[in-house]
Length: 254
Image 1 (tube, rainbow, N blue to C red):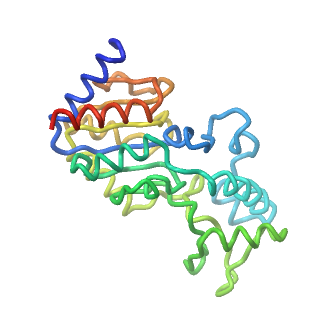
Image 2 (image 1 turned 90 degrees about the horizontal axis):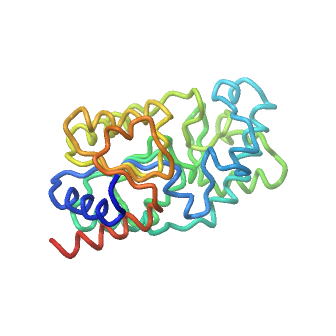
């Protein structure tokens, strides 16, 4: 892998030479902001079972179970702030070095950091939606209803079920966002993959698509992924530290 300084130097060189850079982020980029990922022992996801989209539609009990978890997750997310990794990506965009940012995350921290061209593959936890008529609410309004003890809120327009505007397990991926993500991946010449285990499909196929189209890959992730062999440079260090040093290094040579 080389020493840390050698890998930073190589990553900065790749970033400088690239003409079209795409970033792909997963839950690991937000753990430094205090948001637990799916695999964090004792985290929100570890203490509740997964309720599929079909279960949500079919069962009052499943919806109550789902909203109980989401209510706790909202409390965790509402105080979270962007960390150094989020701000470094926003800075790369401002410098004209980052074309688009594809994220599996639902926390909205990329936008809070200042990134504007964000493709949210799994939706957003900042809003709730009626699954029947499509009405949207700020998530805070639904959270207030949940806090009263009503854990199966219904739409005030059509009486349909209300759920966060996120993609649940076994729910179809958003076609528009997936198409945009594949377009970005196929035209970039460098892809930065940050904080994803690359185990959730079809999102995990995006770095593979970039590589297939000829892009170099830089992986910044705490643990191994099934596609590490595709990466030109791999970091196991903190994403905030790595991206921060890459941006500062780039500033010195452009």
